[in-house]
Amino acid sequence: MKPIKVFISYHEKDEEFRQQLETHLASLRRQEVISSWHDRKIIPGQDIQGEIDQHLNQAGLILLLISPEFLDSDYHWTVEVTRALEQNAAKKACVIPVLLRYADWENPPINELSPLPKNRKPIKSWADTDEAFVDVVKGIQEVIAPLIVQLVNSSNGLPHQENTTKQEDRQYQVTSLLNAANRLSQGKNFEAAILKHQAAISLDPNSVYAHNGLGIALRKLGKLEAAIASYYKALKINPSLAYLHYNLGIALNEQGRLEEAIASYRQALKIDPNFAGAYCNLGTALKTQGRLEEAIASYRQALKIDPNFAGAYCNLGIALEAQGKPEEAIAVMEIAVSLDPTSNLFRRNLEIFKNKKKGFWGRLFST
Image 1 (cartoon, rainbow, N blue to C red):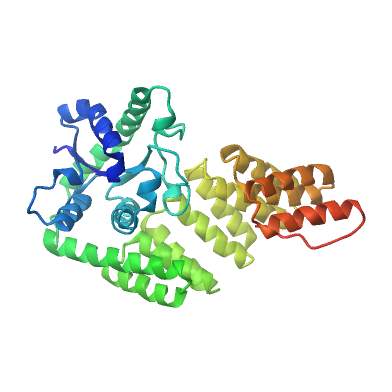
Image 2 (image 1 turned 60 degrees about the vertical axis):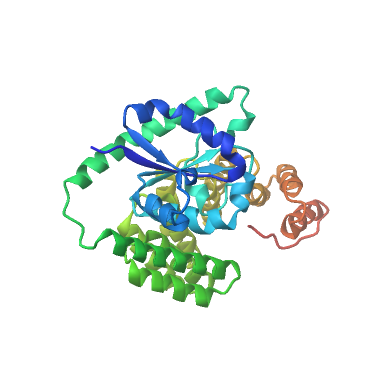
């Protein structure tokens, strides 16, 4: 069996970290368990983009070295990260964020991935960075075992129906369409984004990433039935992705199908027990049903996972106020305001809580 191909995506400012990581991966390379590749291995005169595309498509493991510069790079985000997530969703590769330095990385879509080190503490913040890299390598070793099984199984499968060049050309087109769709969605041009996602699906009907993106764009336009159908198509392709169940739950909740939404959130949490957003949304669905104790427990679990989750504090405060605990509600909402002082919603809710103590009433707003 050939070694598992590891693609390392990183920003040039983090070259030293990349070198240290490769030093710690030496034992796996020496045993021929893995072979690693990064853009420094491109020979002068080679087609840079072509080499990157080829190695991304062939990778069984993709490491995203996370830093502020990496997240700020349009190139890394629109090319390497997008392609990596496609490969991950299609189960063609496993993608792992490696946290190098403190950065606000826990945002869609990469926040659904499980990072290393396991304690989510960036390598630079460790007293001994060698200890941090050993933790990363051990995490990689845990991932490699099932990948080896997949490689053995795939080597016994049927021959490819298309040659490699055609597959790579088609994948490049799909990636370009998805990047365009993401930019359109960010600009709130959801109608145009839908067309791009549909074009990507016509080229690759098994693109989980495209079906999910289509579902999000449809939901933003209030086309909930169509959005739900898109999420179900994605789940049929790969039911093991927590964020698909989470997004389905949001659409079901907006359609008023609370029990189904709750079931979807619970399934997301079964797959990823550290999904703070799923706990928060589950709490809101439970609160809507009047199940305040369960809702409060769910919000508290979200905050246990992410102590800086301002929206969870806000929703917890509303649930506590509904439970007749105004002092606790005010204290919790004050935390939400301190975490996000720019939020008019948080400040308004806090003002309403304080006015209620004086006998005045107002409408509260959840996140």
